[in-house]
Image (cartoon, rainbow, N blue to C red):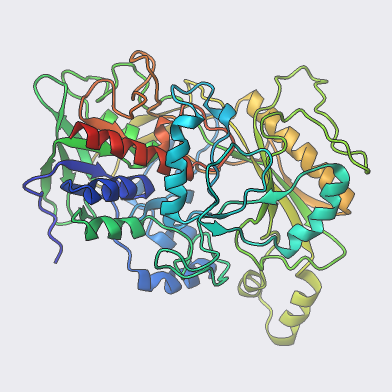
Length: 540
């Protein structure tokens, strides 16, 4: 039996048990604070991961079923020009979306902070702490990365076989390849084994070598924190002055509703559910939603867009032998228009023949999981025995591809609102996502495709597919909906991650991002969470 009644005393109430909430809870509990974490989803048993892996690779099971997503609890609507597939890449549960993430962890570039009220140096020590906390395998071989103060906790994974196929071609074209920092163990670390190569990293790491936030939940509990699962917060209540949050009102599976009081509150439920909760917490003093005197709650929603291209080549590529990316390229990140000089003519500079705006940041990836895996081909086909073996021999093993992410600038009209015509399992309006891809982002995708095409053509790839501006999709990195700033009229939280409107309400999430760059956001989320925890501790 799980006790889901409120704690009689709490210094801090954290909403959400993903990476941000777990790190905040652990840091504050380690410093002797009484911490309660309220998590909307369930606590998954680690022993079930192999079964979940099998479920993920069998075509009879939908992808949302692997981590129990879907249904009335997870309803949403998409009201923008582009459909946004919210449930495709999120997990509600102890560990959050790190239960099925890719695990790539880069520091944002110094240029990414130009519009932020903090700069790279403000986060630099927290980045180092976050790398140690998550356990990052990496190498200091990226000439375009920001400066760092110490080596990564573990050595980088070696380049894959398909990376080696790209290497000679990229050298001829003047394109720099380098390793990818991964939050997965290249050796035993922090009580977890080294990667054993299941190759199902997304959506399931059965060995636990890839970091997931349930590890820090366990650490927090060992220090005295209390974590309550299946306790979705319905709204936040504030005092008569409207200056302090007094309680988080949450529901439990038995149909009861409880109030958790605390001295400080930290929202760590992600870039969609945090603005939704604030909007649901409207009151007489905050008719437009809590902490929303600026009107910025829910606005400036951003994501990263995927650009990719691939096909087949007349040699073995060992496709899908590695389930994660081991090499990438930041050479075109800060200046996507640049060309290169190489013995093969290099990459051409960006040509602005149409008069469109210059592209934004581009990160290029060399995909280790191009083409179908033999397991996927066997399970989805209708052949058996020798016929299946002949098909695998003929059709498997020579696929190769490149991917990449491009940045999307913050736009006020991209936003999260409440759809009051549709409700969840507790009768609350669901989040409605208003999202579109603007012309500048499309230009960035076209530029990424142009570079990818030049590399693949030089390699001799017969290109059979591409993902460009007309058929792209989001990386599901939810950013920008409670943006950070110094002006209370234009932002939701200050540089110390505390809301402008309420003195004891902080936000630890990618929702505070001012811009998103083109790099996976989790390491920055972790760094900001540790920073937020320090500021909360100072106030206590």
